[in-house]
Length: 216
Image (cartoon, rainbow, N blue to C red; front, side, top):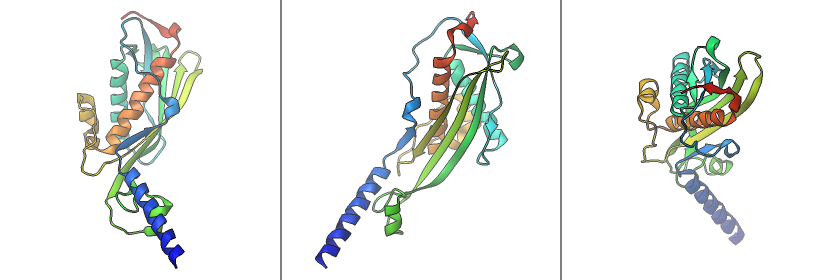
């Protein structure tokens, strides 16, 4: 009987720790994709076109897809490395597919038995605030327009979980507010920002120097 109480006590302790870890506000970006921050740039630019995003999930509609594309183009423009033109004028085409777009899902509960793990299912229904979790995954390709050769490609994925009682920081620029304001201050806003910032950084770091032939 004593051993049974000890085992139960250990289980409750582990569940409590799992719940504590789950309440931390975080955005999980695939660390293998993260590069160094972009340094200030002034020089030749590459001529690129950005295709309409391929919506490969039912979680996002066409209007939101266009808003995400507009925000992505604004990020590319801030790098000062690219001139975004029509496809027929471009040397490179950027193709992006949205594989996963989940603005809100159950992320488990904060406090005792939180975290959405099998352990929390064991205790099921104990006190705790349900957390909002958002996910996004992109498939990214850099394509030579003339030859249709894929120069570089990568998948980028991010996840964010809310911190109860605290608002998540999201972009305040006009482009984000114009099309993605419904995600401001929410996990999905941070996920969109993180994924697209990483996509912009990846493109800037992986476009060959030979394409930077357009004077500023």
